[in-house]
Image (cartoon, rainbow, N blue to C red; front, side):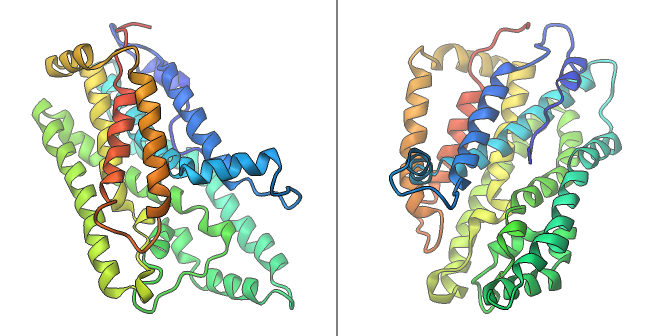
Length: 328
């Protein structure tokens, strides 16, 4: 399920004079992020240890490409939604919070709730056989805690799993929707912050810098809590916490502001910082981050590896903020 706006007609309609109607670079980034996630989860029962699909899958897991892809999805979502909103406020349309909420509901809820009901009604009972005790536990737990999925907060169940005596037992068909829960929580607060930012250019720096700081602080706080309350230092999966991605969302929104409004400092940075070899250096940096991140995604976490999340945000921001022509 896509986490980002894909309606090109909306992008075109939101365009005003002197701005690009469509950003094709985003399609390329979307494709890379989506394909990396698909490869990482590709695990057919018939592959052998030396088959090409299995080798490719191990390669994506070793470099954490799926995890970096998730961060890219969130950053791209914030970028595109901010870019469209800025276009609308400068054009014939005005930014409306209720219209924003309705578009998100119509885009995500039908498919999300179909997947949820299908897993609860079909997949769960099929797996719940006398010979599959583990599936029986997962199905029973999932039905008892179904409110986590109906309310789009299932990611917090995974994030808190292993802290104190709480353990998440949701089966794979439902635990996989955690990223949608993060996205929906972002959608809930994003328009409110955007309205505040639109009132003054100075507020963009203030609020979005605050988001970056809060995201970093949240991950540090999770490290402290996990060390104090986790079972055998294995709990506290900060990877699933919404607050862990605040800086990702803030970086995407701030980059959209720079690309669209083109403040002087942003154009100067674009002109001076970029080099033809920059793209290759960025790819190499992401591969290096992914390789190191593989052993740091899950507990026990260390303070020395926490900045990797911030480096991923910076890499995404640099990819989206490359010099762009002012017209399509």
